[in-house]
Image (tube, rainbow, N blue to C red; front, side, top):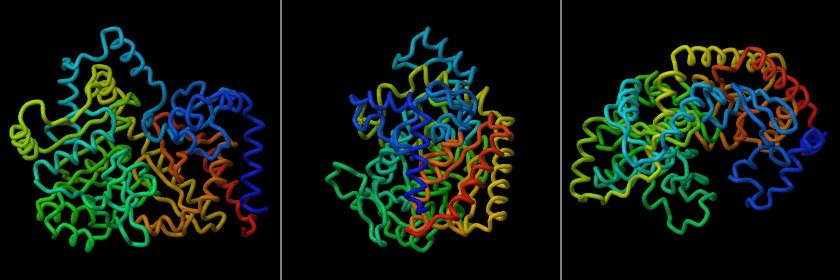
Length: 447
């Protein structure tokens, strides 16, 4: 059969097994696209899976199907769903009040915990990583007096217009998904390939770049690893040219207790952490060096009181602070990371065994507790090369196949995440399902 035939068959299997989700989906006309957030339709299924509950690393839908969850909300639930420590703290804080626009004693403790864990002495809170990245960009422009930022092709830093640029046939342009934006973002944003040191040096030599905003490992266009020496050179070049280095650890927090930066000794001027830092409660944090904090103070003084306009009323609310305190003290422990990293090693070994057993032209990229199956013999080094191997029909077929076998991975490409609750049996089931798909896809006829 063709891959289209296979997808049609898998859709029919899913629809037959999920009548309640299908019924609920038919009643969701009040939501544009039929869901509260359009990304909920990015799964390969013909209609959304409606969730009944989730515990640990298992999600159960309204039709009673239990799934091994390797998506984990695309990272917010990285440490497990429905953590009892978090639930108890949330309930208690809700009874004491949620939003005051004033600090609590817990907030002081959270600030110290962030400084100790991630090494940067000064912090601020945002409601999402999008907000944190937006703040980082504006402060970078304010303190440097420069208008441009630099991002890497294939990046995603949340809903930040400045970052919605890409390279199309090597030429920078607004991303096609930047709907409704009339401004040409390439006027103030430079975009270059990841791992391209000559392009980086050329861009920084102009003296126009206020900040480089980057994930330590690219994770949003397929996982792309930094080449040996890339981060060292990135740090040296930004420092030499007076450009701030902003690292977005929203996904790479899965690398270890202090994120990828802590594990690899990176030294950013700003560090952004979102999603999992509050266990899924909407919150993000961003930290800065002492030197940068002093420069920010000068810029703020020049603007005058009440003029910065950076931040939202909900940022730093007591509920988010309480959630972060629980995560930093009780959940994001060394033992939890040890279990996650061990599980990821087991998963990677299982995936590579499938590749070897079936002699597949596939590969695996692995960073911390996160892994990705690439439908190419060698992992690409930049987004342009990754786009060439992202076979969207094959990806849809693969995701549907896994879902019909009770396995969820991130709906965007083939990213898989291990939580402290992910057991060896779940990992074995995932590897076995990948093996079954490997056999099935070898029978696909050319379209």
